[in-house]
Image (cartoon, rainbow, N blue to C red; front, side, top):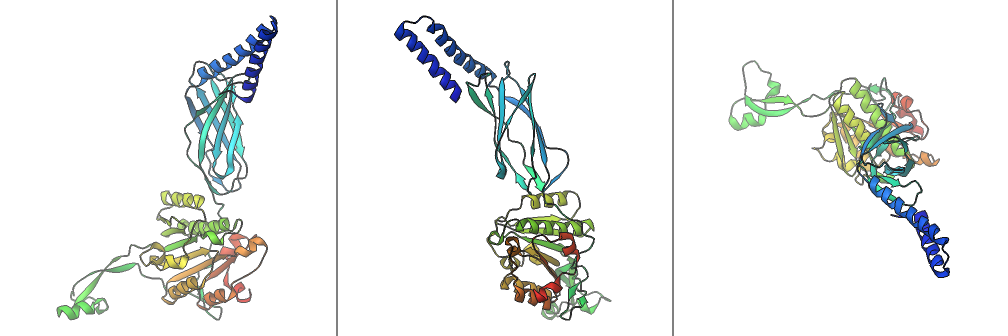
Length: 400
């Protein structure tokens, strides 16, 4: 299609031609003809260059974490017999919007290198990717669509934790640490007849009474993960970059468990209810990291409702770590009930008010958790994440 300049030149050529015809000025005819021929030449050039392109793209071999500058290199090989005189790469990059970059020509190859500066955590999808091909005079331009590349993932900036605030047990009401009894990893699979010498503690008394002979329980490994890290992606609790702090905290804790060979599961309380089991430090951890990179605060359901689903991975886990920015009585009730049943639970509370400069704390709810012996860490804007997650955590809640 004609550009603004092209329409101007075409209009000027027609105007000069009409003036030459109206006034009988022969010297104006070559001028008008030249202007019209330039427009026609531009149209032909662009049509000949309008052919498919072969694209190679890269953004480095290293992983990119939030705050990094990400270099993007694009190389485009023309397949047409006539290479484009000028070309511009246009693409929409996720939340960054439209990006326009002029392509340099080296023979039949077009290339550009540009930098996406200080990217926040996220998944950046490249949409509406195209090359705008133009003639040397900028009179005619056509958009040639290009295949969209894979999404660019920018991972959260995690911290390495040598220990966790909850590792040595919960706090008793008098401030002492208590080591919680670890749950066995077995569940009832069935019953069978009693064999001589077996412990009577395995007797299934209900089946024994019904059959009139001793029956014992058969146990098998429970299909449960040792630790569940629950990231609350509540959309209503987000203040500025508070959710990014939640993601960093959840990811750092999960990485600490995985590094020490513990089975874990990541649960994101978003609209999609994403779940990723992490049983190996290779492929499983990579998928969990990708989930953390793309996590968005889209959740509309309370964490307490998710924990009420007894067949869910968070409720079934032997240990539970909750990372949330919304502390409600229903959630506290669930956590206290879990602690009372001798199942380990801990809480990381990201104070959203602190990201607006305020310092409001739901102290009664935190005090109730402390009284129940549940380890709690409070994260505010600007806090040292590693120091907070490795530290004792709870005592501050008593006088918040």
